[in-house]
Every structure is written in structure tokens, then in C-alpha cells.
Image (cartoon, rainbow, N blue to C red; front, side, top):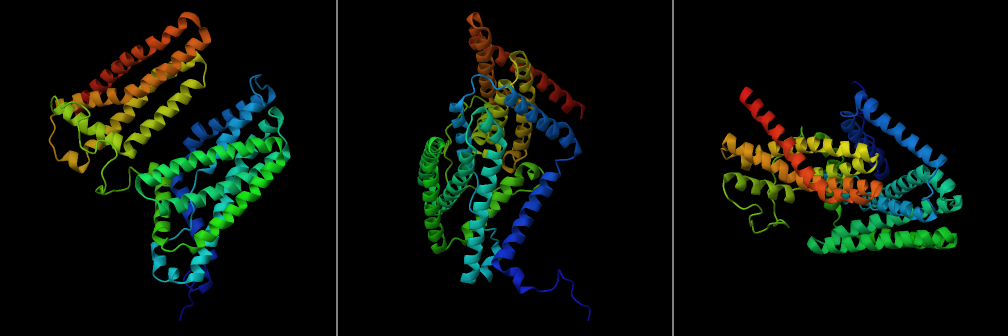
Length: 432
């Protein structure tokens, strides 16, 4: 009889909680890396990532060599606020799989070992995130803000422990509360956590004993939360759902065009427009289709989130460069925004319910044109106000009239680009 290979041989120790946890953890991150590697080819590294890294390093070096006079110790609070927001990221993870419920999850010792592995993993990730962020900012904090090295070391410990305490609290909160009550309690908890975190860190900047005592107190809270978590029952399905949601969140932007997804019926009323009142007055079929589109865009995160992200990226793109370059960027951004909205519109028309209707090509052209313009107006107006504000701050006096002129000019510029976009689409359709 042929001997079994090492991969096929049964090894009971492989299914112990710690080895199995490590195996699943490495497999999870390897799968995510393979998914992201499909878009991170040599062109992305050469034209996007490496130039961005060089620009950031160069700007950071110039900031250290010649810091602006406006930079003082009070701005270190902004660094601590960002560190506090970083602690809100992440969930308590056990890398549970549905098959564990057959045999492994029936063993109390195995479940306890899995939970302990999750505690160690959560604390290690908090420590990694906090230490990397503070290490990147340490030259600025030490040279410009003149903070002490001992403070930064204790700050890493403080941020890691409090961040892990927040992860455990959020995990317990999501299992104990449902619906709008959970949203309300979670929002209040976030505000309290941010205030207390920043307040104690600022006090610790002047007195390290305060920060050290806060770290010890946070460690005691973590120990209490760990004890409560070990006693909780019926958490298996929640752990599986968390793992599934995290994996989807990490790869959905890459695989959303290739994954075949069946429509899932909504089991609860939407928070917006629950009574289907018209958002756009139904004058004709064009406005009726527009009404359905805007309701879908406001209800669904997969349609609204990209628009919000693009708007935020546009704000950064017109806020960082010089004013004249910002104006050029502001004039170019609508082209990209209209293109993104058109892709969303075209994909929405192919959804099962919308595809049941036979729309006239002329009516689709009118609805598509209005959907792009109306969807882009809020972002374009926000960008116009930012550009106008920068013009007023730089030139003063009559230049402040740009606050009134820029939004109007932006609207007509948007309509002009959209008319060109519509003409090109009609020409392409007729030539096919």
C-alpha cells in the first residue's frame, strides 16, 4: 500500500484550536492578497503606488526640514484624534467556519482555546496598528511637536489596550442589541470613547502617570470583558457571520464585477422612503424611472458609497494643490464623476426587476442625462464652494464673489460636459 502524503495524513494536533486558528488566519489573508494582486500589477505599482509613496516621503521630509510656523504642540491633538479613530476599526475575530458546528464546537475546551486565540489576535492587531501609525508620525512628533519618547511608547500601549477594549465592547453590543437601539447605543459609545481617549491622551502628554494608570485601568476592563465573553453562549452563528462580512468587505471592490450575486429580498422596511412616496414628481415615464433610480441610490450602499468616496477624494484633490491647479482639477473632475454615474446607471438598468420593462431608447437617453446631472450636482457644488473659498482666502476682496459665481458656473459646465457625454452615447448606440 502506498504511503499517504504528508498533506493527506490525519494529524489530530492540526485540529487543536491554536494550530487551526493560525492555519485559517494565514489562509484568510493569503486569499485576500491573491484577490488584490489581480489589480496590483506592475502598471499599478509603477504609475500609482510608487509615485504616491515617493511624493508622500518627499512632502514628509520637507515638512521635517522646514516646518511651517503654524505647526505647534496644540496640533498634536489632531494626531491623537486620528489614532483614536483607528482604534474604532476592526472586529473581534475567531475565524469560525460553518463546519465547526458539527463536531469541534461541541467541545468546550476547543471553543475556549479558539476564543483565547481570538483575544491574542485582537490585541496583536491593535498593537500592530497603533505602533505602525505612531512610528510613522514619530519624526514629526519628536522633532516638530517636541514630544517625549517615553510618552509615545506608553501611548502605543494605551492605544492598543483601549482599542482592544473597544473591539470587545462592540462585539458584545452587536449581539445584545438590535435595530435602531443598537445604532443609538453604538453611536453614543463611539462619541464617549473618542472623547475619553483623546482627553486622557492629552492629559498624559503632560503627566505620564495619568496615561500609565489609564492603561492599567483599561487592562482591567479588558480582563473583565474577556471573562464575560468566555461565559457567553450561542455566539457561534454571530462569529461565522462576522468572518463572512469581513471577507466580503475586503474583496468586494475587486470582485463585485465578476461575482454572480442573486438578489436577496429585504426583510425589513427601508429607513428612507418606506411608504414609497415620490422623490421626483411623476410627470411622465422619464421622471418615474428617475424616481426609482434615486430611491435605489439613496437606499443602497453599493450605489451611494462610491459617490461619497469619490466626492471625498475630489475634496482632497482640490484642497491640496495650488489654487490655479485646483481650478483645473475642479473642471476635470465632472468628467470622471459623470462616467462613474453612467456605469452605475447602466448596471442598475440590467437588474432583474428593472429589466422586465421595455423602455424606449429616447426615454432612456433623457432619463440617463437627468440622472447624471442631478446625481453630480451636489458633489460639483461642494467642490465649487471649496475652490471659491480658496480663491477668496488667497486673493481677498472682490475675489469672495467666487462663492456666488462658482456654483452657477459649475452647474453650466456640468451640463455642457453631460451634453457631450449624451451625444457620444447616442452616436455609439446608433453605430452598433
